[in-house]
Amino acid sequence: MSLTIKIKNNHWTLLPERALFWKEKKTLIAGDLHLGKSGHFRKSGIAAPQQINQTNLDRLERLVHQLQPERLLLLGDLFHSDYNREWFPFEEWCTKHPDLKKILVAGNHDTLHETLYRQAGLDIHEEFIDGAFEFNHKPAGSADKLVNFRFCGHIHPGVKLKGKGRQSLRLPCFYREKHQMILPAFGEFTGLHLLDTDGAECIYTIANRKVVSLKEN
Image 1 (cartoon, rainbow, N blue to C red):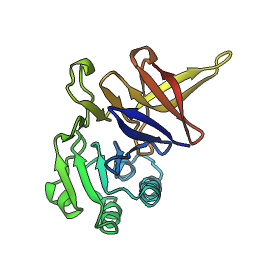
Image 2: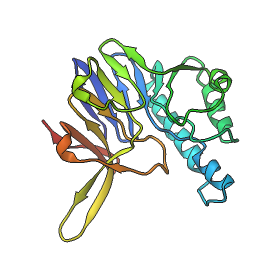
Image 3: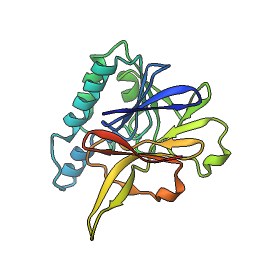
């Protein structure tokens, strides 16, 4: 179950698939897919499930089919590593959606040759600005100093919830500060960076395929 919020009079739907939909601009936003990570690990002799790449693409396909966006905005770390054969399924997926405008805000893992991104139909930016909103890979060091509202990824935000006794649960989340929101990593097999709940204005956790407001000011 998704959750729709308003930021600067625009509507943003937080999706349990760990992505975001901008209603006014019909834009699907996701960060940190880390495609190719399992292939990179296996190449290095580290066991990793082979189906991770396809699982990520299948989830992306379902969202595109469901939401019918006009744009796909990727907030960096699209491909985890050096070029490997797991790039091909993504390139093939892109060719199936020729009318979908695809924008990549480059992240620190996006080190493939530029021609590969171009062949997949991606427009590449260091930063993407649309109206009062900016889209970057990394969070701002001081969100209070931002002029626009920033959406970003990079750190794979999560929170730790404690229950009775010693029970605890780690969950991915959308982490909102005064002038920025950090999106959870879209990709599987990416891990979580636990953040302090006290430092957030709003936290929306993802649990049991639902987006739930944990903290909202």
